[in-house]
Structure formats: C-alpha cells, structure tokens
Length: 241
Image 1: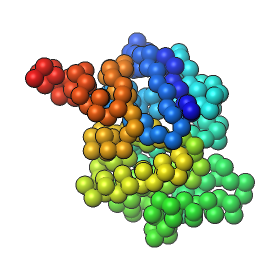
Image 2: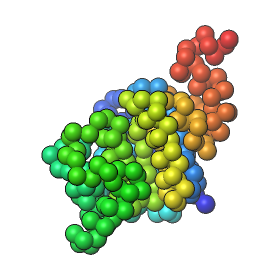
Image 3: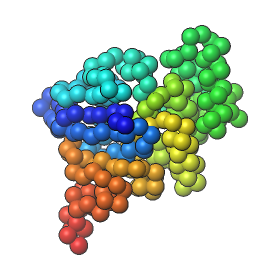
C-alpha cells in the first residue's frame, strides 16, 4: 500500500533550483532511505513536505490526500512527524516537559499529554532522564530526545534527518535499534543519513539525489553499486575503476 508520494517536486530559491522534479513513493511499513552528498537537496525535500518551505511546483500526497501547501501544524496533526539536523530542545525545560509539549499536538488535555509523554519516554529509552534539564544532555541523548519528541506527536510517517550524525559507534548501534523498533511499532520512516552503515543496514529501498535531481533508486545493494551514486560520493575516477 502506498502511504506517501512525491510527484515531480520542484523547489526554487530565486534562480537556484534546489530540487528538480523529484518523484518517489513510500510503502506503508517500510524504511525508505534518502541519500545524496551535502547540498543535494535532501533536507529541502523534508522542509517542503513539512511546508517549512512552500513548493514551487509538484505535489505531495499522504494517505491518499493531497497535502501540498497544508499548514505545518496540520501536517503534523495528519500524522507526519519529523526530526531536525540541528537539535534544539527547549533547553531550560526538563526532558519530560519537552516531550509533553510535543504531545499536545494530539492530546486533548494536560493529563493525556503527560500520559503520552511518559509512554513515549519509556518506548524510546529516555525514562531515566525525564527529570534532567534538556540542555544538559550530551549530544547522543539530545538526538534521542529529538526522536522522542517527534514520536510523541503519534506519527504514522516519521521523517528522520541525520539522527546518527555526531554519535559514537556504540550510539550509532543504539540508534539503529531504536529506528527498527519504531518501524516495528507500525510507523513508516523516511530517513536522511550520511552514515552509510545506518542507511544500508536499515533501509528497504533507497532514493539517491544529487544537485536536486534523482540519480538512482532501488535496494541498498542496487543503489550502492550504481555508477552515478559512486561518482557523486567518491568522484568520477571511482565510478570508472
């Protein structure tokens, strides 16, 4: 079943085409990888999906509905959650209060928001840090808090933007386990990630872009062996070796 679809997405910033006619479909229940070199347009695509940036042309469909141009808060309420590359928790609030704030996107009252937050903290493995002030968390736990806050919005589709960046190898393994756990709970995932161990380990399919354009699409093995992908990441000489 197709849960999410981009159709010919275009995003211009002035005369710069940051995304050019990118199209893909995401099946319900899969982990879908979106890769490309720095500046290739991956986060711009996420920002268009969330309507942080209005699209120049093309359309975005979720659960069979055209959500192009829908307000950001309504996109969240519809069931699309996301994380950000640069994590910015509510620094002077506790971890619990950060998650409660996110839970209010769906909760009807404070008790329900608190219950959702506690359940999500337990699920994401941060319950033992619930009373810690968020700004005092190390980067690995701040990244986990970012995921926890997004999960507290009760998403059906979760957009993960470089959640493993800056983590130690051990923390990367823990992040992989959490992402798989989220998928196993019934949440579909689109993930942007530069750490190839993460993207190749967990993705069912991968869509590769460069200079805002699609260059490859397929299984992790197919994409990692694709000439255009090798050239984009390693240089033309490697693509011909």
